[in-house]
Amino acid sequence: MVPLVFQLFASAQTVNADTTSDAFNVTLHKRVFDEGKVPADKQNTGDVMSDFGGTGLNGVTFTVYDVTDHYLDLRDGGNTAEQATTAVQKDAVDAAPAYANKVKDQQTTTTNQEDGLQHLVICE
Image (tube, rainbow, N blue to C red; front, side, top):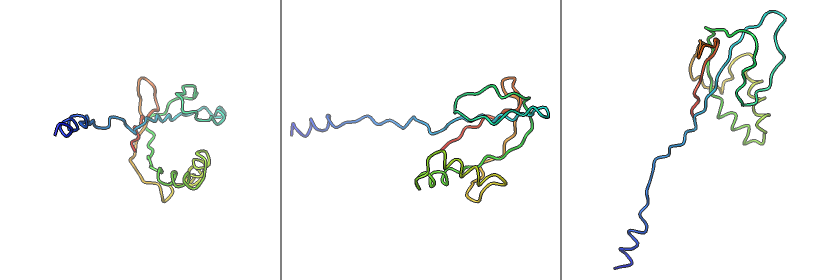
């Protein structure tokens, strides 16, 4: 009987809810440039980038789409992250592809005294 009582206390575990989040932040910058002064394409590094040039443009409406499932299918099919991203971007040149799930419409505004921004919190 003593081993059973000991086992009851020894096997007690503290259980906590998962406090991690799969959410991440994306900041969209909508800029307008003087004619003939459009900068060359700039690679997104994933780091905060503040040297865009141009002037922030408020009131631009855009639609957020979720393409996660298709992207993951491409990755599972052996594509690198860059290949999967390129494929999704190519599919979306003229319109949202059929596999894109509309999340919501957004509009750029002034945030922290900077025009042309929209902060998005993306959750998985």
